[in-house]
Amino acid sequence: MPSILKMPVPSQKKFLILVVFVYFSAGMLFLYFYRFQINPDGISYISLAQKYVSGDYAHAVNAYWSPLLVWMSIPFYLIGLNDIVAMKICLLFSGIVVFIGVHSLWRCFTISDEIKRAIFISLIPLVLYGVLYVISPDMLSAGILCWYWGILFNARYLEKLSYGTACGILGALGYFSKAYIFYFFAVHFLTINILFFYMNNDIAHRKSIARNFIAGILSFLIISGCWIFVLSAKYGGITVSTAGAYNLAEFAPDSPGIPIKYGGLMAPSNATALSAWEDPSYHIFTPWNPFASWHDLLYFARHFCVNCLVAIRKLAFAWCCIFVLASCIFVQRKKIQWPLTHSFIMYCAITIFIYIAGYCFVRVLSRYLWGIYFLIMIVCGCLLTVLYQHVQINKLSRRLIILMFSAGFTIIPAYRLINKINTGKEVSILANQLKDASITQGTIAADSRYNTALSLCFFSGNAFYGIPQKNTGLETQLKDHAIDYFLSFGNETDTEHFLSTLHSISLNEGKEHIRIFFLKK
Image: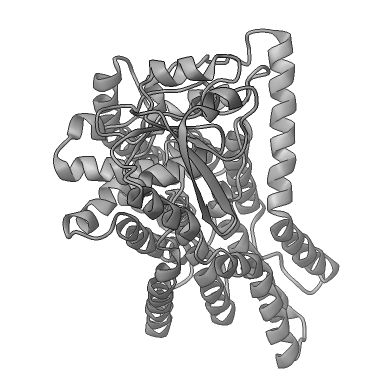
């Protein structure tokens, strides 16, 4: 088991408070430039939050979108904030969980105060980018995971039953933030506790580990089970989440992509929904069983291997840091005692493997890996501390190394944070032009660019029915679904004659160009 540092001195606590204050202040400043940013997932989270506020609980319960971010945003909507601003402020608060989680996690490692401060400062642009550039619960779930790992890997885990219970509570909160954490926690918590049990020969410690495991898994199942019960009652069967099966269907051998985007026109999920994307569970898609045949299994194995390579590439700098620092310690192994026990190295490696492998079955995006990113940052900080303790390095060189260490983890997120300023502004302006043309409270379809069209509908208050299928008559599809307006991004082909008979207007803003055809008489 890993050793634990003493409780942080007041100066460390004050520095944590200072960093959080700087982070939140900078976030409020950047919020002005991200007040237009919206994405399809964010539209769904905002819509669900509004349903809770209005008391439409039957439609607010959703098996595809996890509820924690929605629940956290409710107070900001109750005080009447703008839809996007309310969610962004909620995300800024959720970013504070990352700082708490990292603070909890690094107490399992020996890290100098100087490097701790560098890590905390490095987190500011990284967390800001994560919570502002896209509306998603990924940063929130990463913070909860770091907090959970900090308790599980703490030496006091053997001493207090409350540590096992806390793990279970955090596991349930992780599930509420993102459904994937339900499966990850179940596998990871069981695996690590089995390792703790068999690698500890002390009978009293084994009993303590068993008690903590039972307390943790029971608290996890009881709290998670409340939400699973609600979902199961609504969807008519035991339901943890519908996201996994739906996302897996996207990568089936014959799938053109996301079912909701290529399945033709679809009515919104319910009377107050903006589109079918609010709850894809209700719309027909063909489930894919990777074990149905050898062909499917081989295809799935290839898909898994490709995703593994993607994960390695996305964490390339982090792997390089670990390799370089570990190599330096190995070269100096006669002078340096390895800072981590072999068992703790195994715990970290298993954690990274289980977490990444689960996503490799479906899809790997950079934001999915933030929790692992933070874990690797802390491991690197520990290795760097050991080097400084045993290798003579002058003060200037030490600071340069720390600067390079910090910059390597944050320079890309910081660049993207600045580069993506005013994202969505052009779409917002186009939506205002739609309103000026009295195109509101109607039904809209588009010939392409699902995300942009959905964002336009969000800003203008129209219902979005998606993109018509290519192999079926456009006129028939539009009339069957009573579409009022058709948005063209310049991709009409064999349907141009039909569209040319309709009244239309063109809208332009920056690089965006849209032609709107009026089907409503």
